[in-house]
Image 1 (cartoon, rainbow, N blue to C red):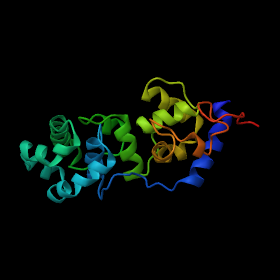
Image 2 (tube, rainbow, N blue to C red):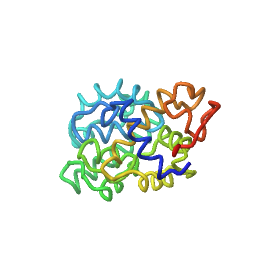
Image 3 (cartoon, helix red, strand yellow):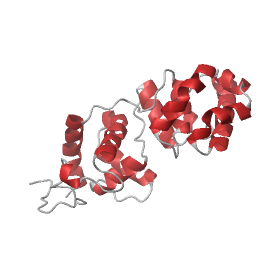
Length: 218
């Protein structure tokens, strides 16, 4: 199967199956989304969405986070895991937002990734969902798994998988790829006990456990 010949078919099929939001996290402002995405590292979106209402009620601006004592911030985000590191990153990035960006979340990849705790994945999510910019494809565990199983990438790192996907899909679809692949990864192409029999790609996917597979081009 050729990845280039199958990418468009895969995209069309996923669009028919799923209607995901731009982000699975709950947010109102770009700052909300940035903070929620940082909290989602090694934590489920469901859990993040449980704790952010109380956090966002207390903190609406970068200044609000800076005035919140570190131990109180840690208490509010405790159930998200690695909460001490995340609290540190939040205070550091809010300090930089205040000093260099007037308290606003920047909308370029370079500026976002210069903030503490913000890598390409977080930046891609914020740029697409908050600002409508397609600067890359956010590769989390679901996107990584689905892309490799479908034969769209052989990359062993999120960075390599992202590069491969960016070559295969048109730029206007980059932001949407994340949510579509996550939806499929959660519903069907799961990490354990994948549901190949229920998969729309069960006959073509090179990783399918279903017998009688055929090539994408046929």
